[in-house]
Length: 103
Image 1 (tube, rainbow, N blue to C red):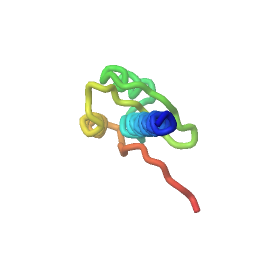
Image 2: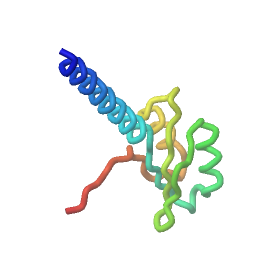
Image 3: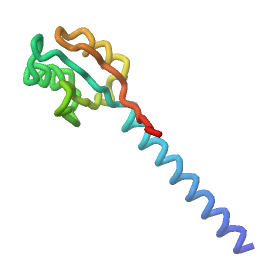
Image 4: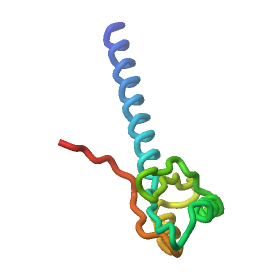
């Protein structure tokens, strides 16, 4: 009987851990947008000010391409963020972050 209770406890702990890991992955990937811009139409400092005024956070600046990765605040949806940044003059593309596997 004691062994059965111990096994039940361990399986519940493992399930809770898996759910937590799924939530962590969900929030990290689903809150990030990649924004590309034309530096002839908008400067990086100006775009950074737009990001800050929207309440988003810059998490990465691409060196080889004119682009940044931003994390949308929890109070706004990823779709709202995408639409906001697409409407900024000089922004050429806004896409949701995703993993790409190379074979």
